[in-house]
Image (cartoon, rainbow, N blue to C red; front, top):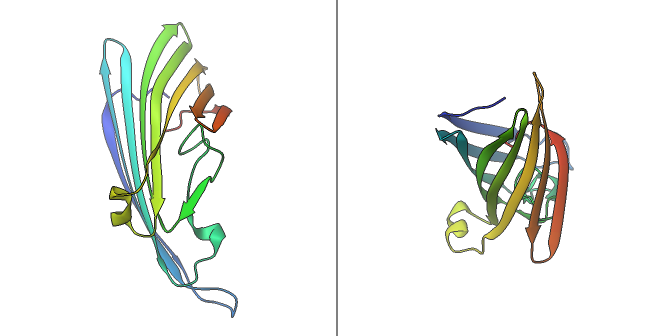
Length: 161
């Protein structure tokens, strides 16, 4: 519930096969790195996600999305779609009183045809603020993320990462 130190490295490979005349083969590669550190009771948490989809005629529902509750709070869900995506999240998790806590941070993300395109593409950055209430076995979270053209209000369970 309250990761305060350490790191997580994760890799993913997903393969879709051509099984019918209406489907196409594609491969999605993904890498995620998370880091947690604590100082004076405040936990700094970071997450980086890089993904690339390779194939011909990839349906839009299988493209990589940025925006919404799990990637870029403050943008509409799946606001940007393309064949590669990059996401970076930074949170400062601050204890307030007993089971209550706050989060201050920022999300950043971008999409492109290839991972190398992310270096020169426009990255959206959204500030984030939130409250947490920790029960014994789960966390209730409320977050607000905002951008120049949207405001996202999210109520969910568990940390974003």
